Length: 358
Image 1: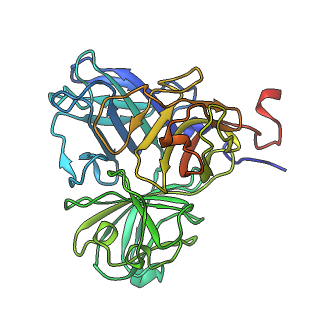
Image 2: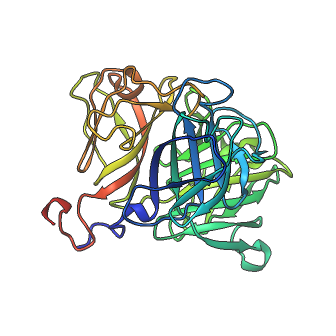
């Protein structure tokens, strides 16, 4: 039996670590052997903040690649005019001069995480009967990823997400106003959500998702302004769990340097971890910045702080990952964690053959 439908994760997800040169037209090409034209790009400066040089910036092709959102605060989108990227390319992106230092400052180091959606959709809910409010965006069922744009109503609603399976992880942002980033994760109860820009514990309230998990066609939103601000433009990044490619799960820490083994079914390329029973950061690790175990250059989604090697050590393995630190943010004794992981390579390919046997 085939284990995965995604033999080549590089077609749908790429990480690129690069150094800026301060020049307009700086073309950045992904490292993989497969081309990928990205639809969602998440940039982060790795250096210490100065003039915004360590800020997070999320761009996508649905809102327009000049419209930036920072994951570490509540700001709505703003225009990167001449200071961001000029194009998404067949296998990467092209940078502008970037006087603001967030993408291309000379000699500064950066990382970009990028995902592929690709197929546009537009849903008139009154005509299709799918969802209660209109939505549009871009989707990729092979990758299990969609970008969804909708206008909030301030009251209970359902929204077509464009995918053929229920999303396991969704990031929501009001792009018009100063609201928190909001997180749905299948490891939470359907009434519970978290805030990507804060260290806070997740909280439960029916106004988030109507106490209803996403279905194969729609996600539910309540009256909370973090997911459904009245008359405001909203964006949602939706991810379906794909065996051998993505995993959105939970684990319990053991406060031991020989940490809990977390099974994903693939060799991870990127992992985000968040403690859920106590305040802590949203920690991001990847194999491009740390190609050799243990992976220890952490970036925090909720702050513009520089990348740091303090405390965080994780081994990326052929079919999962294992914390190698007693740091409470990844491995506190008895603590509960959610994680989000994307593959570098599946453990077993679509022909049922282990990758290390090829």
